[in-house]
Image (cartoon, rainbow, N blue to C red; front, side):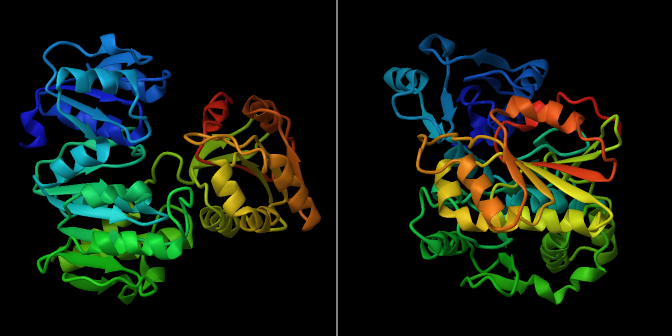
Length: 427
């Protein structure tokens, strides 16, 4: 069956950035769609406005009669009450990656993967295709700046989809073309080491046939039956962008290389990349405080992502004319522990760092590492840092900064951004 053959769908964890996009797709294609999540959010409120049935809290009674499909996030456990009830009733159940994989069979799918930069590269691909007169469908792991959505329905054969390597989720997909931004050590709560991660990406590349394209940078070593394109054949510095950072120019190289190979007009491709406005929480300019302090927000949660973001900001706001104050919410005890030295080495380069408690997300708390440990290590290495007792301390701390030459960056994949949004900022 096709995903579009299912007409009554319930999504467990519908507030997730990926599953909410897929729910929107199904709803837009005529299905009756609802779902549940543990707490309310802006995404859930928008889904309600769009006509989806949303439940806060999970209970077997949330599953209405007549369901023919339940899609669930891989973050839930097998004993989730709604999943147990669905299986008890004999309803077809799929994980989000499985359902997304089913959808990718219906399109010429361009899959963007990589340890870092896949969200931005996915969005860039969408904007560049649009500039070339192609209207693709897109499912992305963030919100597009113009429209504030993670799903847009197209009318072409192309589906542009962000593809996640966590738990080898992307192996469920069926791509025609693949962009690999990079391969780096991450998700070490699941993967054994960098070789294990590389093997997962190789398995994904193996899904391509001779009609497809695999686009990477020259430092990514993958074998493929498809035609392999080295994006470094495009002069990175020749690509004009509205977003900051050399890392974004590297992402744009990949997009330009693929779309050129598809036979599209390079002038129009570059025009689309130039007009790309960025995405939600990817070095997103938020505004200025009443004291004139410039504020940015970013999703980065890996040392190399933070490094790229700091370098991008320093290129626009150089030392010593500007001071960089970083508010960092570490994401997962396991990641903090695995990259402890790398985190402190990059964070010490900021003028000041305010560390919030570690966001534990899906994993148990590990008391062997904390933000206090990060603070002490940063100070020991010559940096300047403090700890905040809660993310709720961040707004007042930012509002109290009086030096207008200070650039504030909130960074992390946790929930601190919600507190940042409470600050009255002027664009």
